[in-house]
Image (cartoon, rainbow, N blue to C red; front, side, top):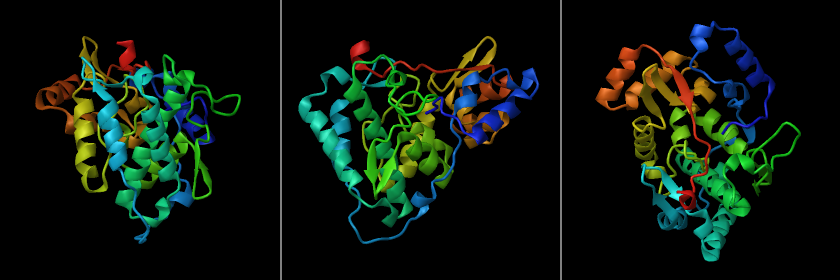
Length: 288
């Protein structure tokens, strides 16, 4: 998720956007200037067919099934205040076990599922460790004067390397596999985010799971809604436009692939996007 941490590439991208005519960027938000770019961490690019133990996602699936609640508006929530001490300990144990494994020895299917599940588990742990908060952005534990939120905090060590949430999303998942559907899988504990799935992502089912997540979000008002001015999309498509073809036409094409027929027709008829929206409120069942 975007933080206020920037690098030279993202600044230059922001300047390029600002140089466009107002008509071309009317739908985009200023937050895109601060969204991290995808930049591969070479250490994690290695993959193999090692004979070592593969990650076991069964305990994680059981944890999610017990704790994920479907809210009235179809938004999956967590009752953070109601998570028991035993469940918090179980989550810590899941993360600790995963941290002790060697993902570079695995095939890419196991790697992708591992990093997605780890990202989501770490996000929940961060929120639980700092609850109560109104938004994950209030958990200001990232180092550096210009940093905010939890995304740049070193949360654990894997294969001797410190790892942050931004490392997982922007240094591993996005650049190594180049699949925009990753944005529907990693969850930032916010109402505006695609739903936290109530089961683990599994290597053998990952393709179907990503498709289900994409279809669900694009056909939900959080992903795409229609106003008198035209279609309004999630800021995810703005922050990470480079993953959706780098321009508005790519975003629209992606949305049309996953939209239900009536929504796809309305999107095509509009001819362009009108704006963006995103709700950073915590996906907290206790706040309903």
